[in-house]
Length: 174
Image 1: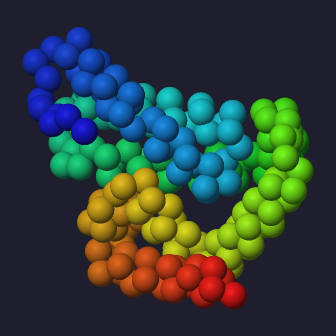
Image 2 (image 1 turned 180 degrees about the vertical axis):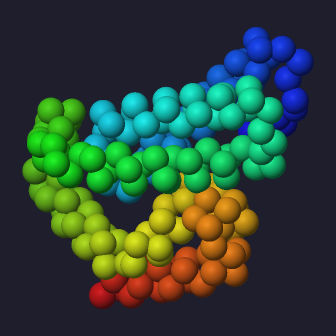
């Protein structure tokens, strides 16, 4: 990610936020999906997060870790979106997958689905905090950035991550 410097003009600020958006939007989108936000709502949420970043920077707010700030805002906003969507029509990821890619090899698809089911079950068995730490780490955030996004210490991040990986390895080895 490029070094973020204090912009001299509104246009420079827009360009810098746009560049960060290009570099980070897919990571933020995937993280929102892991929180349980439906894909269309996650796309909207990503745009809202970067709009909030632009607004905060425009007001002169000092942000030490832009990536950490973006994920913290995405986390909090994603939880609000997820709570609102629970009253809406349920999203069926299997239906979307069928539309996206027709089955080519039924046996291979079945094996892959079984593996994914086991992995999903294992991930669902993790505590909420373990899942959040794991997903943020998968997005490339460092322990201090994860801690800042979730409001916990870097050592707590390490412990949650260690426990999560231990459980996932146990499922893999079964």
